[in-house]
Amino acid sequence: MEKKFSPNSGTALYSMNIKAKLPETISMADLDDKLEDLAEMLQVEITIK
Image 1 (tube, rainbow, N blue to C red):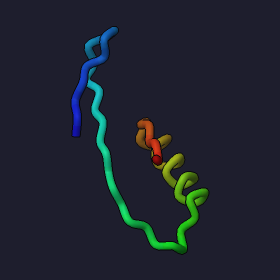
Image 2: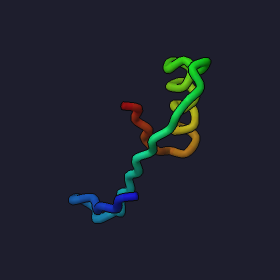
Image 3: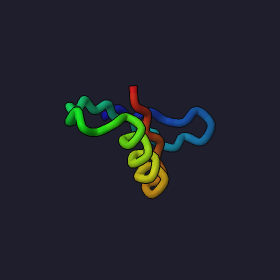
Image 4: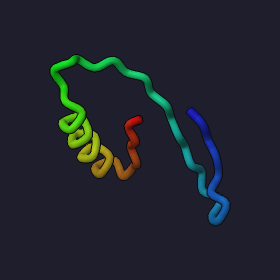
């Protein structure tokens, strides 16, 4: 986990990288949809690379 501070407000900003192996039966579209819902609920940004 990485912690930085916002240059404007000084608020702590956290980032995390996660490597995961997923079953081949999960489509990237379905994963993206589920993570979008989760991100909205948690009020965070989730990016898939």
